[in-house]
Image 1 (cartoon, helix red, strand yellow):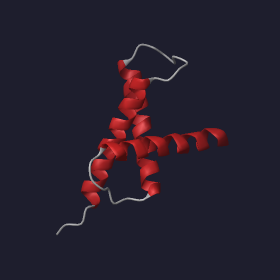
Image 2 (cartoon, helix red, strand yellow):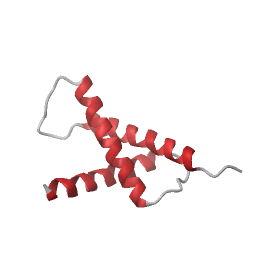
Image 3 (cartoon, helix red, strand yellow):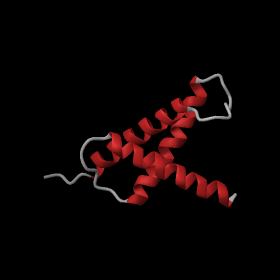
Length: 88
């Protein structure tokens, strides 16, 4: 149970950082928000992959699932930055 939580946090951090790398420019957010958006993106990515894929668990690295998760986290990051951007 605790190992699953720690694994999810680490996976969310990796997805969140990769999502921020694919977005040009600087995003004004801390590491906690990066991890939270990464976890949310990963969950959305896994959900979408399960909807479109007929394979179950392949036992290896599902690159498409990673790509979908990173894209979802990137969209969440863009949404977050647009909502929290200071209006001038």
